Length: 175
Image 1 (tube, one colour):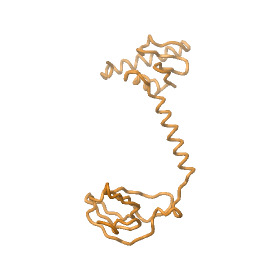
Image 2 (cartoon, helix red, strand yellow):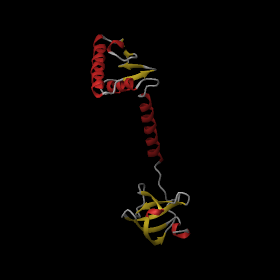
Image 3 (cartoon, helix red, strand yellow):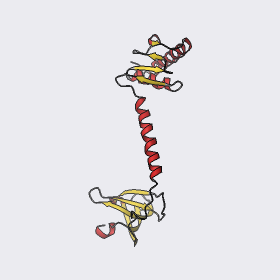
Image 4 (cartoon, helix red, strand yellow):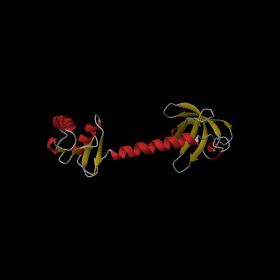
């Protein structure tokens, strides 16, 4: 399977060593890694199935025909607005996820933060857990470490901490 047989645009019928059978058009072939990039079927439009296949897994194949380059820029459709929206969403999610991780805190502190975040709005202020923008929980993150906020909010946070500490002890995750 050399040269012309892996030319971009070739439409192949392929049987793999794993028992898969499909038709695909070669989009690209990387000789170093011996990987084919194939577009399955002949559908065109904004959505396509792409398969990466290590050439060693090809049991047999037949050349159906040579077609045009499937990545011809004049025929490709990219919805840039949709791509930009997906990128923006992924960046916002990554930033939100990043904010949820405490820096320089123990795994117990992170577990308590995660438990509090299930029912209450929380954020980190360095190594202090800030709950509802008013109650602060400092290291060692015990009920006695809770300060600020209304008495009701303070009590609620203390109860959640007590419950989570007991749960962590029964699971054996606390040190």
